[in-house]
Image 1 (cartoon, rainbow, N blue to C red):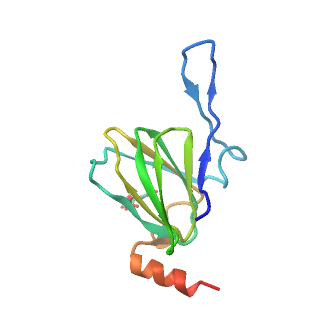
Image 2 (tube, rainbow, N blue to C red):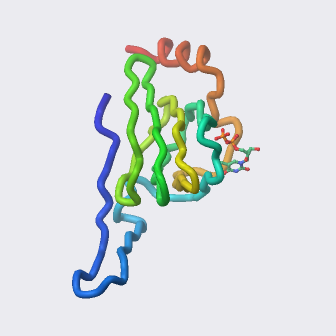
Length: 138
Ligand code: TYD
């Protein structure tokens, strides 16, 4: 599967210990126009989230605190990414199944989307997902 992991530019002043800053705005850091932000937090260690794909939406996933694993699956290949830094951003494109696991205590997963919430944009059944992928193969 293509590499969907991006490094975000972090700004820090080496002359002080005032921390780091990352900004994301239209035309910088985000490979689409953002329309919605949501975040997932307080997830128990063994819980699994996600487990769906989208018909149209792109999502950029950033674990801004703590860490979690995201497995992206295109119906043929699966790749698991460890998001353990606010500087790492993972792009989940349409027709890619995403599964979120191994949330550490206190972790916060930020999701930036290019579309407003629409329940009809979700593919929540894995067998249906595989069928759709198969039907859309050239
Ligand atoms: P859901 O997408 O089911 O989360 P997950 O699949 O990761 O468990 O979202 C949980 C609830 O929140 C569901 O009732 C829909 C609602 N929701 C919105 O209203 N707007 C949003 O942007 C999102 C992501 C969810």
